[in-house]
Length: 234
Image (cartoon, rainbow, N blue to C red):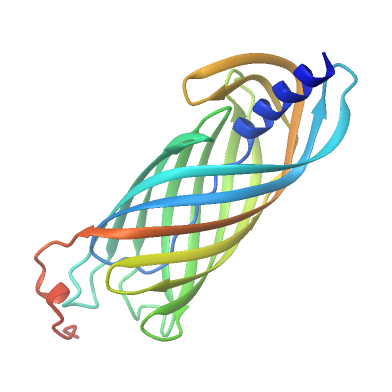
């Protein structure tokens, strides 16, 4: 029974963690397919006694992202649309980058991310960053998430700040990032991994830190003149 309870608790924790959601501030045109992997560090209550145990929860998702930007001009915004699915459930985001140089040497933008798994998460966010050179950049994100267990109408607020670093070449993007989750405990009544669901009462998931990494490959680029290497028009 103890082994079965521990295995079930592991399923609950696996599906109840906060999804890894991060991307570079600067939008580049093209369709990209990538993987997003992460580890959540926190604690989880186990069984009827409510014993608190530390947990390390892995997560792996597949993301498809579309970037739209005419790089021949600096006064137009960039648009990023993404959809992802995997261990933690499924979701997506919409992000708009400010016109470049509107913040001086910094890039900036705002977005809205949504996720559905054992936890439902809706998070508006803002972020900024800077390219240190053509191929490397850092970014900082601040998001306020509305979080609710899947089978509950009750919601809580969580503050999720993120810092990250990314590199880019002609065919791929690579990023690493660190997120913290500050908010109330989340009660999980039903655990779902993809399309399989199990009921498990008296479980609370307390995620406090997420370490993530992603790599994406460029699938296609639109035929904008700026994507052919012409200098931007000011």
